[in-house]
Length: 516
Image (cartoon, rainbow, N blue to C red):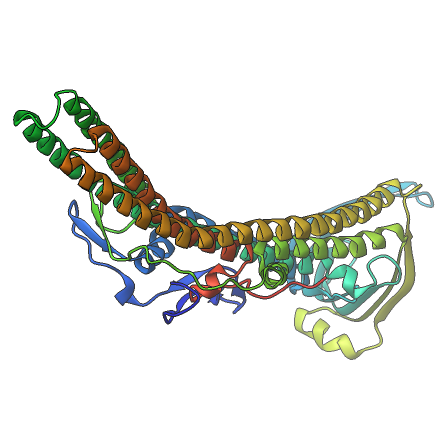
């Protein structure tokens, strides 16, 4: 699982999924992982686990990741909502009505009642375009029956209406701003999900190595306890034959009690780390009593680190949080473009053309459409609110928000560089500690052997021997901890630089730099 040496197996978090019906790409992650990565587990028994298996299980079964994977899918639905604004709309209307008009006939001094029955059928389609154009096609048929005429009258009309925005709503980039913002929101959610997946992988690796450390501590304390008990037995034997005073037994007993105390704490830490690791990987068929058998050992890794400047440059290119912030800034640019249109008055040009036919029968009215009947309208429609304060405030808010987002990007870039350099220093420190703690442990072993020899020949004391054993124990723990901390520091450095998934062979969306 390291960037050097072992070959990486590919893990893919595939972003290619489709929305039903329209072929649009939904944002999201669909895991495609080799099945041979999955370890076998028997409920309540043991789980053989390497760090590679742990990452696999977490990416397949972690519940928090399952929740986060739905976020881009939900965000992606807003793209379809905004795109639907430019979809054709079909409309239809059917109505019946009656009108009675009272007319005063002054010439004859009578009242005339005229009753008219009117039936209307109309259908058509309209569509908006990003150019600020709206086109409507309609077909209409009207049947009228009046008491003034003997026969029913039918009229038919086919018409087209075109409306073109000349000022507000006339720019394509402004009309598409909300759609582009929805697309950026979906892209931002992918980067957010990538950041979550990267943090999860880092957390799994950190917890795995914590469990390794707790397991190693348990073994070291168990060995130390066995040595202390053997030393106690040897001390009692020497006291029995008069080679040692009885006071020597107290020091040996204290050392045994101290080792037993350390073993109890180590076992508790190991159990806590085991449950935390089980919660992260959430393997199918396992429960809280499942024991974990570790396959990876804490081998020292002392290869030189890449220059810190390289890690800083990579973080500026690949850090998911930074790219997500850049996407938010680009969204703010679109908001400035969109709100700028609100400062303009509305001026629309409209043209309506129609052909009409009239007859005493429904079919003949439609056949008469090529007759002399027609209508047209041409005009301008103007609208502007007094003061236009709402649009001005919205535009100013958009500009200020964009400026704020740009400042946030610059601040986050600086913090990212600080995080990377801090992680690099910690990684370098732990790398150097590996060799230093190894030398200390080797010297403490020599000190212990010397004290044991002095104790056997009667020139040393049980207290001095116990102190030597205690110093050796601490040096052993420090050596193991230095190796583990270096592994953890490497994982943190890769996460801070945004390269952890790549170095682990995990492919996911959001692996490209966002440029403002």
